[in-house]
Image (cartoon, rainbow over all chains, first blue to last red; front, side, top):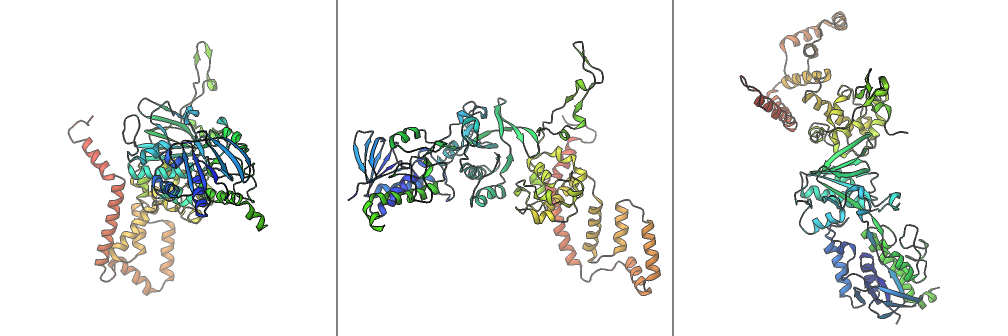
Length: 350
Length: 261
């Protein structure tokens, strides 16, 4: 019997991989640094997911349950990997609780880190209470509290969602598009309009990237059914007149400077490489791609290969990724890890 | 290219003192030129909903500003100031004062509907132009256009009689638009009709003018159409809060009383 597959990170990709391996009878060890499984959707308290519309705690919670109930997944929470050595089929890892484990292959499903809006001080986060992030609004919705201004708990009458906060910005060394924020923001704008029909919701954008089929269900629907307004402008600064937040920028479509009062400003924060990626890169000896995410090898060969044979990667550890695609990549990379775990069979097939 | 193009600096916003000395320095003429702020504060966020409530304006909220309407526009090709994309944006963002700058151009839409077929989001910009012109009229920003007068005269007659009698339409249309009936071209046309048309037809036309024939049993249809038109007009007035405005005007100035503070 081969050694188990080591899965690092218990978010959607890791949970999918563990489930996949269990369905083919392959044992795995799922290491999660936090005290519970679920990853960002659970730990950050996301509300309804795109595109299913299911609550994160139900959808991802179901994946957690499935893995927890499987006899083939050894779950270790509150633990990290501190040393990793060996070769495909025979790796050794030391965990932060000083236990050593053997693994046939490893799968990094280590995810991302939310952009910290404090790094764009001109947009008022940390200065004005009613400037919040998409994550905070997700929590307002998922907690059942509803969308309220943090300063005094009032229902906002005017909300501005600023896109590309922490994305597509050379000033802060983040040149990538975080891929999901347009769709998340359109979804959030609809949720706000649904809860507060009298609230005007404006989205300030440079481009709208509700890619693929999200175009109709999110971008078009938010405009056509929910009357969300899209203004093509990158906001220059968010200040306050003591009463309202004041958003300044240039409305590029009419070539006009804009100064507009809002009750609440939401930063559609992007996806940073996991803040532990340098450490992970050192421990597992895998290369990072230029933006700092974990680098993938040839996309047309084995799925989810890193620069180190036998160590695979899936989900938002590789770059901004949707939950659906993270799950698909988790399943796919599990297949690659399984092939290593079942090493001799591969030779027979050749 | 600089962001602030020259045409955005409107002449009326340029302030220049012919003779001005500040701290002993002569800054007369263009040395003292000052550009007044372009900042708008009077947004009218109701404007989009009001125009959407008028026939043709229903789908304005779908617009994503691609400019297909303006690019395909027949009138824009002749007059670059005619820009449906821009007006839709002003309406959606509530920039009423900017829209009103173009109130005398918007009605020029010729309803060729090229934009209707170019628009990827089915905004039906031609309908929006129609609704916007209608809105401008209802709000009193523009007088009724000649074509509105014509439409009214035409439809009133059809609704009343179930028939169209061209002679009466022309006469009523001229009366409402305060035009002389005895226009050279019309006199000439009537002269030639009289000389060329068969006598029986002339007699029928003459009689129709006097007797005002109606479609048989038209009454029920007339009542139904009238009811519908009244309903529509009432809905439009309500959407634009026109009756509220009238009430407000009434309550503000009562006879024999000073205007309320």
